Length: 363
Image (cartoon, rainbow, N blue to C red; front, side):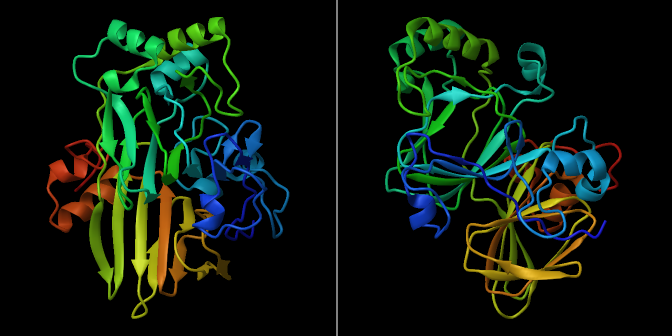
């Protein structure tokens, strides 16, 4: 297989909470008229799978590539199922997203019959003054109290309302009740899954009312999958100088994914080697990307999936990019941050990074 960076088709969701920020603020072209709530940059979700858009592999889905070439695509990652493990999106929260949650892994297997749940993280690209997010419940909120608040649609009575600022990131474990918006533009990375339980009286797709019996059933399902413990916080990330004008900021990390933002000036190119697949999304001006023998342009708000078989990345600055991947928490996250002088508690605050290295790690 002669691998190259993969441009993928991007399913678009025109839910009622969306607006035009992905087109107007990020400069994304080719979007349909009307509200655009989400573009799914890399997706192997059933019914919304990305397809290779150009080159010799054009027309093949991620599922097909996983079936025939998982090791070359992913690298040395465990992959218990047939799906590519990561889902990434741009989300325009012009309006408020529904209050909802996604099951964690154990609950997804037990109650949804799915191989995994959905832990996610939001990197805030833009936020209106005073923008907030609802993330997790307050200490002491039990099932009965939560149910009563959901019936009243009084979310502030039980949920934590956090300020939202551009440049910050929050890691949201599966089972955490959450919402954000209005006035919030987000890049999201998460486990590949579309399971969710909603608390709302209207549908996010078109705003139509949810019948009473269905709504009450939704609340019962949500309560069965809810985890009261997680209370994540927004975080500016931890930065490491890499070269003259090149900076790596680890935005979040856990066993399911890590997300980093790399910037480069004009003194030195951005260079990165990688043993496992990387999702490269451009958060800045168009850049020229070289990976393996391939060189091409990546426009703003566009994404390339870099197969592990390529193994190296070079971008001439100025550059501002996002890199998502499944990490080796010891080698990719903990060791470089400890060398840079960060305390274990600061590293743990990135998401779900254990306080101690795994037994197999020499660090």
